[in-house]
Length: 269
Image 1 (cartoon, helix red, strand yellow):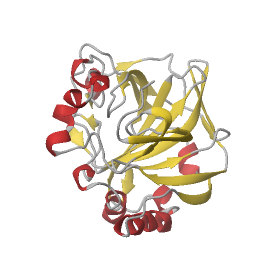
Image 2 (cartoon, helix red, strand yellow; image 1 turned 90 degrees about the vertical axis):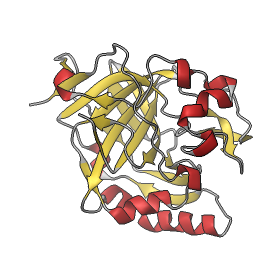
Image 3 (cartoon, helix red, strand yellow; image 1 turned 135 degrees about the vertical axis):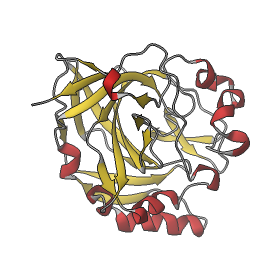
Image 4 (spheres, helix red, strand yellow; image 1 turned 60 degrees about the vertical axis):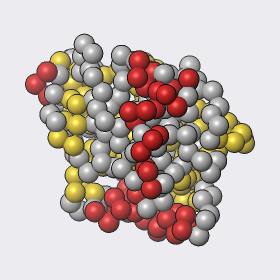
């Protein structure tokens, strides 16, 4: 996986996704990439030799999913998720807010391979688009197999009623934002976390092979983008943005060329 970068400091074993750097690191005070300005997406590849795929990769994420070009694959299986009630931690990585999971969380099986849920984080506005439409926010649930292969389940959100998943951590999220204002940014223990919404079996989803959507932009990541769009309130989006660096408030990478890749679709009964 990615080598340590200058903006990280080595600590105990920790999975950091969002930048999608899987290593034993924590965020230092200075970000090496942002979502605007001199360190923005159009310059990522020039910021570090390890980021070259951000410009040269042919299977990059996110993408615009054109629904009438998606290929129906009857061999795709229903996405059955089995997560356990576990104690989780809320972390501010300055470019995204994330929930970190312990090893015994559970996960999903895809192509007869088990992927364990390691982390989930948010982007606002959404990174993926459906038929050119960008949504208010996007949740990435990052799963990792024993061989290191990564699978991301992505959920899109439109503005509307409050999201019950974020509702369960609302107080902690506000606390994280408050700590940033007070120059504190340590992880916050959330306690037992087991939302039923994360265990629903979606009727329809899109699948394609892409990349980490932030540096180092590593490829060969499986994306499962759920077709069902959930709702999120404007207040919740603002709470997700509040702890972030000013240059990362809109932490969505622009859509990337599809480059002859096929997007498959699973449609349940």
